[in-house]
Length: 197
Image (cartoon, rainbow, N blue to C red; front, side):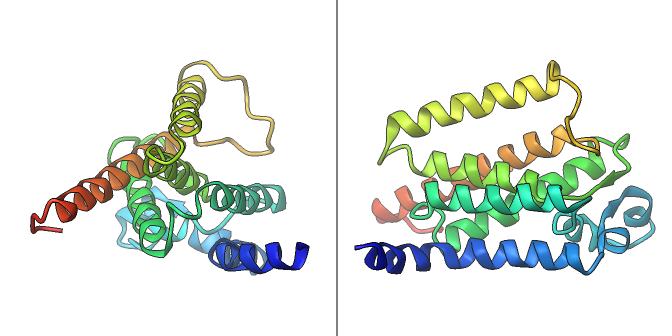
């Protein structure tokens, strides 16, 4: 019985475990200094830092929390975040965080971490899951919105040894909602026989 459950769960966990291993490897290689988002470096032409900064972390606690969050999100929404959906939402969330920090929040001069993308994956997964589990996913989206509001307008100081860039959480979640909405729109158009997706 346990072996059967493990066999069923393993394919669902391959992508998040692989990505979690990548996050841990990037931390272990101490790439944070050279690959973290630094506004001045991006403006000087090091554009890859817009995305690479989301794969490096401040310390072991930071990368461990992000890897655990990724696995939890995947366990909750693995069906909704199948390979294409998950990659599309993840990339859209990462780009949302990157360009929002660069263009809207010039006061944020540095960033490292995957939490913006995690917020996008969670928001997108919940939005895609509304039809199957409406109560759980609607409640999750309301609580996520409340959490983001609390972080942006009234939270306590960070318990971590580093500042949490809560704007990344909000923009990542927003990117996830936009990406999931595009996927749902495309699904509806395809089901209706309309072209364009």
